[in-house]
Amino acid sequence: MNAEELVAVTAQHVERLFAGEGSGHDWWHIKRVWQNALKIGAQEKADLTVVQLGALLHDIADWKFHGGDEEAGPRAAATWLREQEAPETLISDVCQIIREVSFKGAGVDTTPSTLEVQVVQDADRLDAIGAIGIGRAFAYGGFKGREMYHPHQEPLLHASFEEYKKNQGPTLNHFYEKLFLLKERLNTTAGRQLAQERHSYMQEFVRQFLLEWHGEEPAPA
Ligand code: ADP
Ligand code: NI
Figure 1 (cartoon, helix red, strand yellow):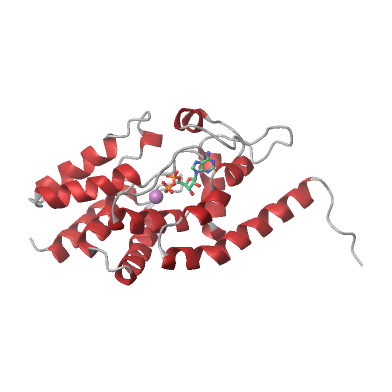
Figure 2 (cartoon, rainbow, N blue to C red):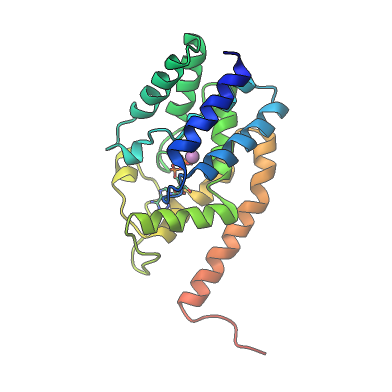
């Protein structure tokens, strides 16, 4: 199987696994990450086979849904790629992406070790901000049974990975705990450019949300 075919069968496999998922990790999320990663990866002159397979498989067994097991994803990806007889070096590059892609709390350094991880991490993080990011945050919060907002519950601003994993806080806190931090943590020039608009849009959303919540909207003229 050549690289193009491997990408195509992997896309089909992942689409079948994730279709209709409701926690914000659905096929459309993966497809957006795949397409953005391809765009950023081309600009950065990254290895596009590694980038595409990493993007397609990055959420295959997310630790958040597998009892915190961080090796579940790389294991599932490696099993799939081995079944397709992919070369071991490719498998190891793809697993590297899955291991390093995730945000793990405000206090945890998640600097990527390769260009290909940088690209996929940026594409994944772009999908966590902006209008889609807002939608996904509330979808995830609802899925986990969280409150939208609680006026007396403070966000965890310097969370370790353990604290981040255990956090049950309201969804609005997630903006301070992760989403507003992502813009400064993007790796590539293209990623940083795309993040600007999405970041301001999210800031405006939270500002308006809090005005409405606290009954402080400006009086009609
Ligand atoms: P990524 O896809 O960047 O790895 P995650 O898997 O951490 O992101 O999260 C997937 C989506 O769910 C993102 O849009 C993220 O912001 C959202 N999410 C994760 N944790 C929370 C949370 N505690 N509250 C609200 N949304 C969350
Ligand atoms: Ni993702």
